[in-house]
Length: 383
Image 1 (cartoon, rainbow, N blue to C red):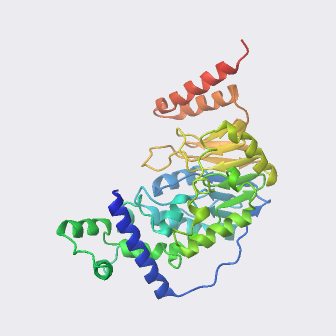
Image 2: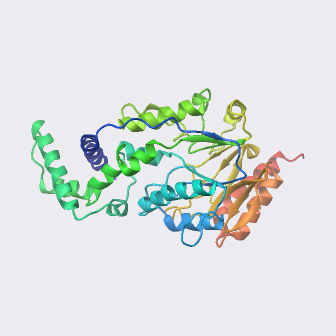
Image 3: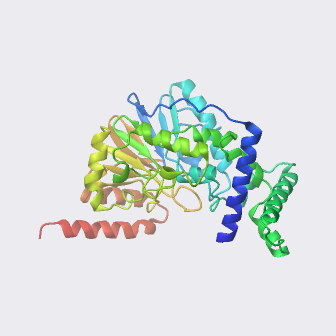
């Protein structure tokens, strides 16, 4: 998307956000959410979904937490989704609806669903729609969409006139309409902090602890190592409730919990800071998404970090795969098969990658990873 089109959308998003505040008025902030659990018997953790309902349903059924009618059957299971349910594919609204319903159904059964805040949830609330697809806007379209879009355009023209800007050309008008398809206004209202989905997102956690495992979207960098989970969560929730890109400091920070990629990239310089963070929170591992793997649940740093963004969405073409923690052990659930997740590098990790490749219709996408790991293992072997 061009910068001009992105700027136009962002400006329109701010206009719609101001309208939303006028329509709904102010609400009191939610009570501080719980962010730690010690009673989980089983945890299923799913990576980035990016608007692909069918793939999400597949992995949730493989994990035995929903049935063929998408009803919760997971009992006391804790289901974690580490963020990025939106953007890139058309079913984002249906994905959010599913999680909102499963939260209630799981609670009645003694389980818990934890949809965390990812950078794409934050982007949508803040009005950054660079990755929002036409199908996602169309999902919010109503019979009133043409009138709402015309009203938004009129307000846009009035603002330009007040700034003494020249009248739009026909080409500029078409560009504006392309950037604001029918359903745009409704999507912005629904994702605003007072909208159905925006308010839901603004009440979620960004990082949680379940037993001895931390879960979040991007990772905890050294910059945020001294923050408590409660501080991180409340700061991010507050920034999203304010919905001002200029004051969304932690939410938009490349080193912040929603955006950090250093751990997923295996930066060896982060091994020490990682241990400090884990020790501070009394954990043995950190589970993250955000950075796609080669198409498998990938343990790094000897299993101290587990990256679960397997590229689940059709946009990336990855497999249905997730992490399962049960009876003190970690497993990858890959295309319906449960594989023990190695807690060491070298031969255990190589064996795991080969097991995953055996389940893949096209194992060649993992060949480069296998070759690289074999090279590292060979270099580390005594000569």
